[in-house]
Length: 93
Image (cartoon, rainbow, N blue to C red):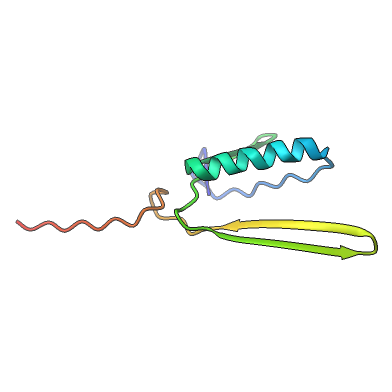
């Protein structure tokens, strides 16, 4: 996770939203995954993520006392330069 000032930043957004707004968020996340860049902002907090070529995707659905919860989780390992590519260079001189 890269922030504007290169520190690790945790960004949490928890709010009641209409399903149509959540769908817009999910479409934006899908577009960012395909592009290899996600910019998230909530209030003063902003973070830029660079998803790697391989991500772990976890989906979990639970129901407890008539409350339904759907959790989506994405994870990947960052490379030092944030590119997500494993590049080998061999030079012979």
